[in-house]
Length: 230
Image 1 (cartoon, rainbow, N blue to C red):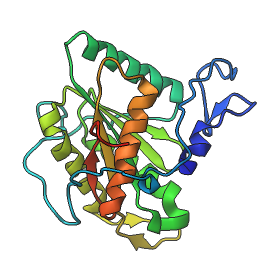
Image 2 (tube, rainbow, N blue to C red):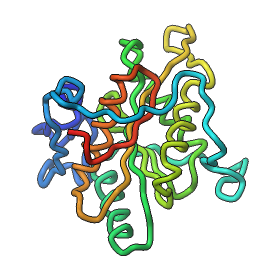
Image 3 (cartoon, rainbow, N blue to C red):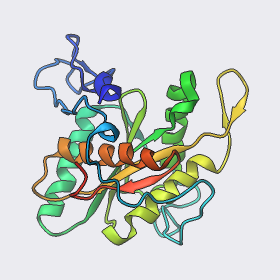
């Protein structure tokens, strides 16, 4: 997808999508290969049910909650290092393969109508997530306009409801923009349940594919990936 080209391009200075890899040598970069053809334009795309129109409340699935996050607990760190992202997802996949965990990976992006403020809104969205997720979740920047959320110990039956609550964190309150104005911003999310046999880069591709396809039903939606999405 063209919008991921920035994040998928390895530069000679050792950066990857604008974020410096650990070590900074530029060698052995973890390239997340993504197709350049927009999924929504592919023939025979099966989009399945897209969850959540604007303003819809999802049922009671906790994001953090008192059992996991104290009121005074610091927000989760928001990671900008793609090597850290790849390492974290690989570790969660090992737990899934051992049968000791389930894990959902989600891609979130603000809807395109926010133009030049997209970078600012991505930063604020990531910070909102970091203040509400559980201590063992993680939030990662991915390129200029994407956030990846890793949600261990989340069952498939609950995943869509949790992603709806994440979307509500975006839409619940207006954003203060750099020019001093405020705006209500919406976001669309795609999610996938991690499995033991799918490479980490393809897990990310699948979550992003679901996000792309959910846009066929309109902005401000959530869609979980399924095997019939081509």
